[in-house]
Length: 271
Image 1 (cartoon, helix red, strand yellow):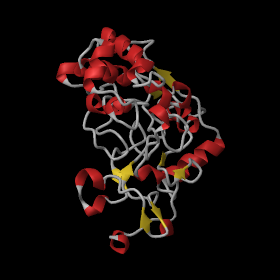
Image 2: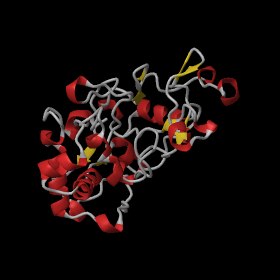
Image 3: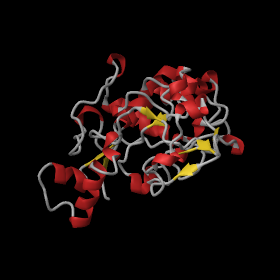
Image 4: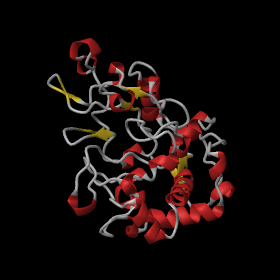
């Protein structure tokens, strides 16, 4: 499925909104988008100087050619340090309510800084970040968040079909859409303009042979109801990503993403 990606080529408030997406994209009052911030954010995004050994950039794990993912089971930071999950796509993240697979970042301005400061990822300190960029961490965060808000994907055949172009989907795809909306139940979670409800669900991906391998959203909320729950991934550009969600123990591919009733753990059983 070929989708239209609009990035910093059309900048800031001047950027047109692709068909199918909301016209309004929220941004903090103290970080409204401007051309200058998006340009700066794009430069920082591809700057390897933001990593301790100058070998990696944000784009290493969020490659535009892979729908801003890296195609790995788990992401690899400086000096070969391995994380525990794969890199989520940045497509349309400006519409997101929370960020990361477990939703621990309430705003993009917080999300974009964490990988830079994580010892498992780019591994800079706030002081080193300021030294290399000659910007405060807050200024770096505002610029990167502004750039991420410019990464949008829409105007797909699916969008054109919804907006009245009934020839946009062939017969097989229309049958798939009917299944998606009906018996398969996909649209219960993959809904709205970004095909994600932005909520957290336990679909069984973190469980193996009755053992919970990643507690997911539970790390953030402490609620037993969130054990093994992860954010619903967007389906925008999903054909160009290697997986939907993974950890060092598992990888869920697009083909494997639909769970069966028997594959979903019951909370009482594993609590």
